[in-house]
Image (cartoon, rainbow, N blue to C red; front, side, top):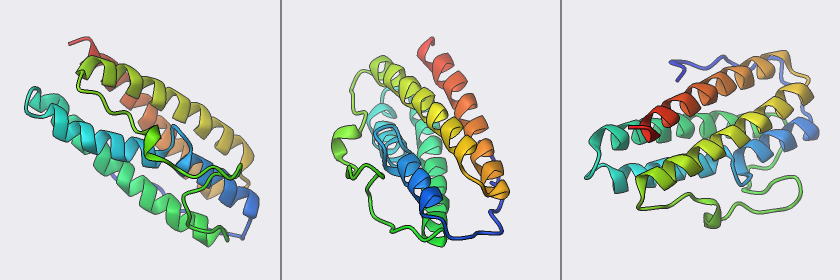
Length: 156
């Protein structure tokens, strides 16, 4: 995970860009879902597998930083900081990946991250701000590494 994400500059209000970012944040496989899923699972898994629990806690912290950064950027682009995607769907706890079986959770987390990568690809292709593209690319690269890490944890 990136030690520090690039700064977004030259922000010109754009409801289209704000909407794309809100979809990344609050969609079913969005950053909020990942953040809360990893946080909860780190608590649940740590007593049986400290290594996996600690890694999931680290992922939760990182996704929390992304959530905060992109949430602020949504506002900077003129969007409302609510928990809704552009199609009017509100984020719901039903999106959370909660499972006492570590392998089932990891398999679902890999799928969630792969979907997140596809959503990031879409966002990178459709936002106009160059520094935002750089930030989203950095997040995407982290997500690709996370898929590799989760796959490795699943096979142990």
